[in-house]
Length: 171
Length: 160
Image (cartoon, rainbow over all chains, first blue to last red; front, side, top):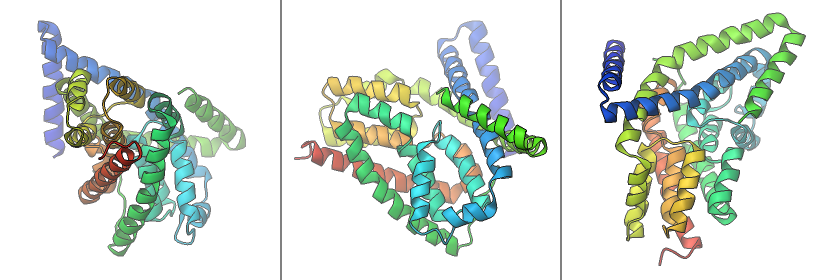
């Protein structure tokens, strides 16, 4: 698998290089896409991981367990939404954060609700959406999706809790 | 966008003032974690760059602007799942489509799956959640997006 990835990425780079040299239009476009998305990632990822690092060293396990763990009840979901609202970037930032929360003792259902909420209710994105599609559109989306997110996260969380499931880091 | 730099800078500074040692420890953790997941991000970027070439914005506009809005919802949901686009591109696009007369429920299906379902983020998601849970989470999210689209259609009087 590891080997396959390396081959694929080398092939991709060779294809881009050849495209740029020969002026092969699709290859040049793909290269531009790659660069612009890489920049978007580079803008967000280092900050996100530094904050994750600070979270790991400063926030006590007991604190996370108390507010997001098995004893937290509904408050855990409230926290998950507040935390998601301030998440920057999108799903790809939410996963490493979720992993950190998991290590600190947050329960699975809260983690899944955090992941979903960070997709649908990040504050800057929501404001942006409302300005283009109208407040009514955004309110309907939030009011309908959030309860569904909570219910599905509870079900998925308790199902996986029984299976002794754990988040991993890179494979 | 810039508030994340300010927030990170302030947090780092505060941490450094309180404990130098812990701050360096935090930076080491940050570096280790980032280095570990970077290959998955690289694969994701390769996929994104290719899919975005195959499915450009103009194609999305054409497909979402079809006559049948039920078919539009399904196409929107599939496109939203497969494509990865930052909000600052996606919502203006939705705004334009809305003015062209595309139904709210179609835009809802597209934008909600765009945010919740990640076919292209699969390499990164799989690394943290594992293959099985990644698939389950995406299927659940897809279903939620369809329900949201349906509700949007009902509230905007587009369903019947």
